Length: 205
Image 1 (cartoon, helix red, strand yellow):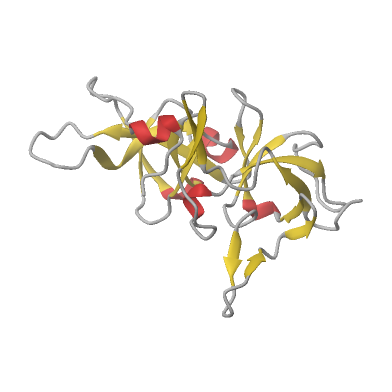
Image 2: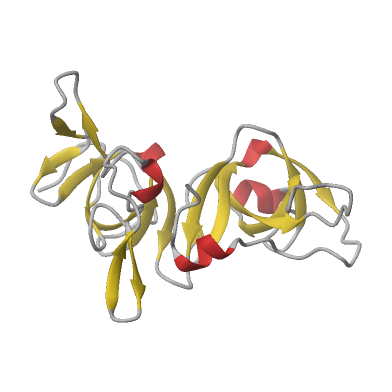
């Protein structure tokens, strides 16, 4: 079965990624179905749209919007599936809800999306551990390539356009190409900033 304009996907693992391994025990770190930080963002493609052509194939892994697998409570307090729910473990995903595709170690940004790795704040007078609005481009795209901005470059980006994802144990910011506003030269003291909770898979709150 195929949809006219949407991908059909299933979760890789559970709908919620809210457990971590502590020794031989599974520790539940979030029990709220409405918390987006605990929602699984990784899916496997079961079917591609009938209309439109992309490089995404059946069987590819994709990183998607956190609302696809998310559950909500209605005004009566009853848990509901998102509007993306199809049946069993199948969900519809619109093209603008996909941010990365490929597989572990071989991710590619989709469309006009890109991902930036935050860097440490080296200002000894600041309490902020992360440098604001500056990071290292992790996953670029064709439009950034044309502007000669490639993965590994130090870039500046606009505020309020970034969304947080944990990809392979690293906290990255997803944004659009036009959110990248400048390419900096390295000074030599830049270092990636990745909080310990991201490496363990535990959400910040």
